[in-house]
Length: 159
Image 1: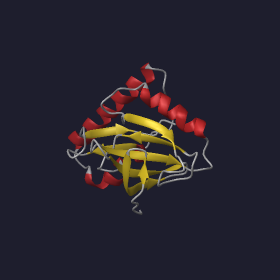
Image 2: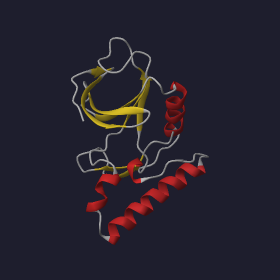
Image 3: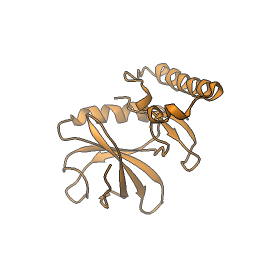
């Protein structure tokens, strides 16, 4: 994972949190408010309609176990990251990483049961609004720690 000292809109960028087929996720902090965030920038090959669709879906979901969406936009020439025209999402940051990387540490039945119930509640909330996740896996479940705004697990990547 690499570090950057760039900027994207009102956010100062930190280290790279992850990279996938469609984009790269960066740690960020709002420069004026100090709010921690994660910024997902789509690669040039990805269609901007996909990220807009994901943003619209997640914006309709207000649930404690679904990652909160703060903003969305398009990289401008003056921004310090990405290629102009690439879309991005500004989301809640979960500093515990993906559940997939935590599996070796989650061994107690009460903790696993709590995680499963939280995720089922989040999925029921999404389904009640006509939204299907389509890619449920440990890598798309993030762990928020007490250092984050709201501790617990969060579903991500509804696209």
